[in-house]
Length: 145
Ligand SMILES: CC(C)(COP(=O)(O)OP(=O)(O)OC[C@H]1O[C@@H](n2cnc3c(N)ncnc32)[C@H](O)[C@@H]1OP(=O)(O)O)[C@@H](O)C(=O)NCCC(=O)NCCS
Image 1 (cartoon, rainbow, N blue to C red):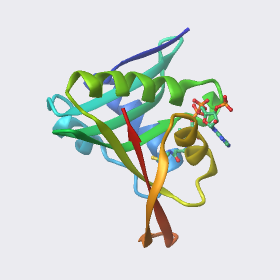
Image 2 (image 1 turned 135 degrees about the vertical axis):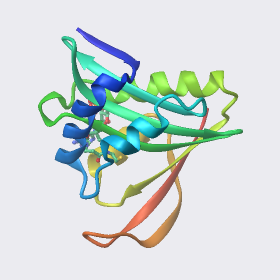
Image 3 (image 1 turned 90 degrees about the horizontal axis):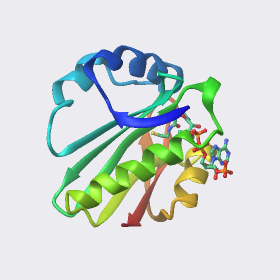
Image 4 (image 1 turned 30 degrees about the vertical axis):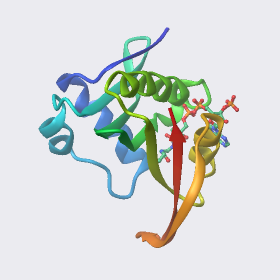
C-alpha cells in the first residue's frame, strides 16, 4: 500500500540514500534536519509497504512555493508515487495561501519534465548554463494552483 506522509527525522537517512542515487550534489542529512520543522517548508515522503520510496521538498514564501526536489527510488518508479507526492504538496501549499509553484529542471530530464507537464506546469523561461556536473541549461516552470 502507498501512503504520502510528513517526513519524520527517523526517515531522513533513507531519504538521503535515495537522493544519492539520483543527484550529483544530493542534500545531506543536515540539510534536511535543520529545516524539517520549519512552518514555511513542506517535507513529504511516499511510503510503500511502510518503507520510504520517495520524497519531495517545497519552500513556501507568501504566494509562491519553490519545488526544491522530488525523488523516487529507482525500484519504485512509474507507479504514480511522484504524482501523489506533488498532489499532496499542492494541497498543503493551498492551505498556506500559496497561489503559484515555481521550479527549475535540467532540460534533459525527460521524466521530470513529463511529470511536471502532466501536473499542469508550463515553461516560462530558461537559465543558460545554470547547472554544473554536467553543465546544462535549466528550464523554469510555473504552475498556478
Ligand atoms: C521524475 C521522477 C521523480 C518521477 O517519479 P515517478 O514516481 O516514477 O513518477 P510517476 O509514476 O508519478 O509518473 C507521473 C507522470 O510523470 C511522467 N513520467 C514519469 N516518468 C517518466 C519517464 N521516465 N518518461 C516520461 N514521462 C515520465 C508521466 O507523465 C507519468 O504519468 P503516466 O505514468 O500516467 O504516464 C523520478 O523519475 C525520479 O526520481 N527521477 C530522478 C530524480 C529527479 O530527476 N527529480 C526531479 C528533479 S528534482
